Amino acid sequence: MKLEFFGAAAEVTGSCHVLHVGKYKVLLDCGLIQGSRKDEERNRDPFPFDASKIDAVVLSHAHLDHCGRLPLMVKRGFRGPVYAQEASCELVAILLADAAHLAERDAEYRSRKTGKKVKPLYTVAEGEHVIRQMQPRKYREVFEVVPGVKVRFRDAGHILGSCSVEVWLSENNTERKIVFSGDLGQYNTPILKDPEPVDQADLVLMESTYGGRRHRDREQTIAELGDILTSDRSRQGNILIPAFAIGRSQEILYQLGKHYEEWGLERFQIFLDSPMAIEASKIYWENTQLYDAEATRLRLEHGGMPLLPNLKLSRHPEESMAINRIRSGAIVIAGSGMCNGGRITHHLKHNLDREETQVLITGYQANGSLGRRLVNGQETVRIHGQTIPVRATIHTLGGLSAHGDQDDLARWYECMENRPPVYLVHGEIEAQEDFSKYLAGRCGTEVHLPKPGDILEL
Ligand SMILES: [Zn+2]
Ligand SMILES: [Zn+2]
Image: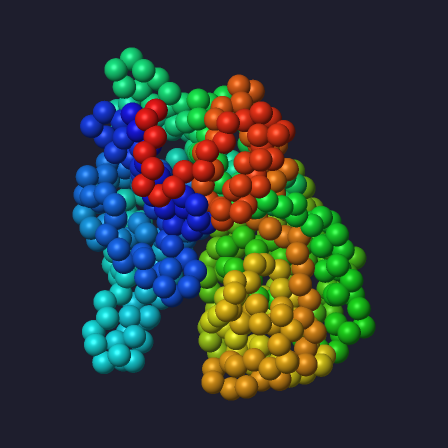
């Protein structure tokens, strides 16, 4: 039995690991490499294995850095099942359809620009093929993936349907249990349950995105949000919230609903201006069995989801354009999360030059993104070829991460009483080194930092 590390070893995106048991090969995740254009070009490289020889894929959750190369697997001959938690399967369908659509549009654009035919990374048809191969499973159900490999999904509290994966392997009378953390959420995240404890393992494959830091307090961040929304200022202009379609958009809507009366939100028009976020929100609103106690209580008190009576869902482009005629009293949640494209760029173009406007940055903004330029306080920005002066106030709200910090990660690990050795994945090298020291100091754990291509005999 072997475990091979490929993607998200010593980096954050492109999660992908291969288990070899007997004659079978099982992939854990098959994520997209994300970042600069140059990084993303690596998605076109051949896999370091033959896709047609993989027997099954086990998927931790719906984020593209975990599932976004699945259509490429299909393109290269993979026809096996893709196992994922039920709500995850629904979210994957939306995300892959969108990713494939963007890939096709990007290829068309590059073909026009270069005068050469550029092929898309994958097509909408290949994305749809993956959806047909998906096999939904419930949390806590033990199921066989291939002979010699059994799996159980545990709630990872990161986004809806996210899982830590317990894997039991057996070959020639040898048995091993490995646990793959997936991406772990913070404890006390709204809507979702806390990361579920796993009691024992021979080896742990663990994410380490924020292994090197402590998050700002979420309650404090929510209080800041309340201060902004109740200030006199908020009555004079519009409030723009760039947000990722899955996770962050739903959390913001939830917080607005929870504090609706306290913050006097009836005086606003609140827009969710993103077809993808609307689809994802519906999946969040329907899968109420996955809610934590507070979300369950609020849902019953409000007679259902969403909690906001004045939420407007704008699907069509005309509805989105109509928002640009509103001069005050609108709260607009739109993508993309880093303002690199999507409808938020239009709203920014129409509002950034007005002093009354406030922009709330609630998520990570990568270097080079428009969102990062706003956070850095640039006086002008370029949007759709125009130079726009930034007179709006830009607020950065830091405490809403979907990833656990150092303490959360260690707390999840400590549920495994036998203190198994840990292999850190899904993190920048500095974060991994910090977390490695922290975990070794706190629990006496043996921690390894695998590199891409490393093979571990189990
Ligand atoms: Zn994730
Ligand atoms: Zn991830």
